[in-house]
Length: 184
Image (tube, rainbow, N blue to C red; front, side, top):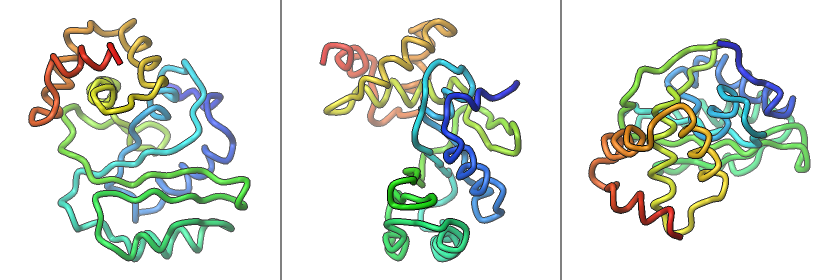
């Protein structure tokens, strides 16, 4: 499979490649809209979501912070890595204007095998479908999540996607919750 790099900016591609080529981030997997746009080529994407299913509290945030500060001319919010959290939202790039938002989060175990394409650990499209259906159950779902679900529905049945969403988030996602998400 060839990735659709035309869906991301050159800075996003460069940022992603710097991160995934460092052993510090070997346990992180690209997920979310950017992962989906790179695989399907259906829309532009502007941020990076890197999730890990390692045990909570085992992210080496000290090394992450040092790497980011050393590797990027500009970084923002790296001090958040000094505290223990479920996730971190950072900005990195060339300047305060030319930067990429990057999220690093712990997640539940992945339910589908992770692929590696161009040295990037990439979530299976079905995993992203499960996560997108979970996202629309939130208080204020984002329009781009509905667009992504529409694109995914071209490839997979809605019933299968609901089943994956429930399997991935069995304690918080229900079929009723997903269907209600479409009425917001």
